[in-house]
Length: 173
Ligand code: ACO
Image (cartoon, rainbow, N blue to C red; front, side, top):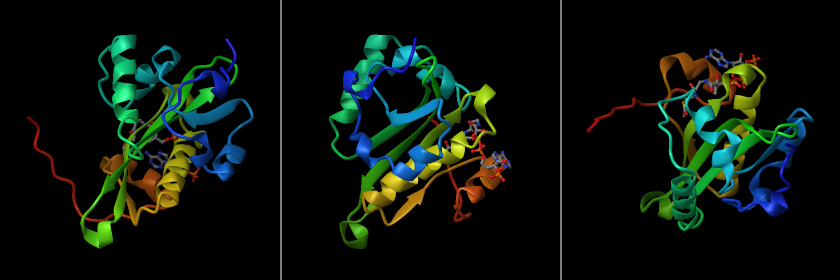
């Protein structure tokens, strides 16, 4: 199975928002694009499971969630890096754009759910996903881009240009 052309896919956002510099930096056997409604069949959930438990979801439920997110305009930007040879996803990440009343009705970009399949880690794919998401965030005019991560991942995000700020708190239901 070779790469499905973007023209045949139902995409989450306009692919032109992905910086050309990130496309150019990827190895020639990989392609970066917005999430597609059919990405359930391209290993999206197993790739996410390297980050956190990702229970099975039926393809129809996956598609319903995709369309619910796309119905919120200019808010969800999930992208994938995909093998041209196998048409399977090897890395993914999401930018969520929040509208604020402060900072003159400013926008904040939240980076979420970064995952690179285990066999592909250490090849700069995580870096490329972050560069693409930050590029989209800044392109949208977000005054900052933020994320939460484990202590172990701090050096990775520092290499991506982030600095440690504040503390994270959580209350699980
Ligand atoms: N500790 C120290 N340095 C690291 C680490 C780490 N844990 N991970 C990566 N780096 C360094 C690399 O050595 C590289 O440095 P270099 O430029 O000097 O060579 C640089 O960071 C870029 O690394 P990549 O090759 O792009 O990293 P990779 O593709 O493996 O992606 C990631 C990193 C996303 C953490 C990946 O290993 C992964 O999917 N891990 C499991 C899931 C996870 O923890 N995701 C992040 C959750 S936080 C969030 O979602 C907001």
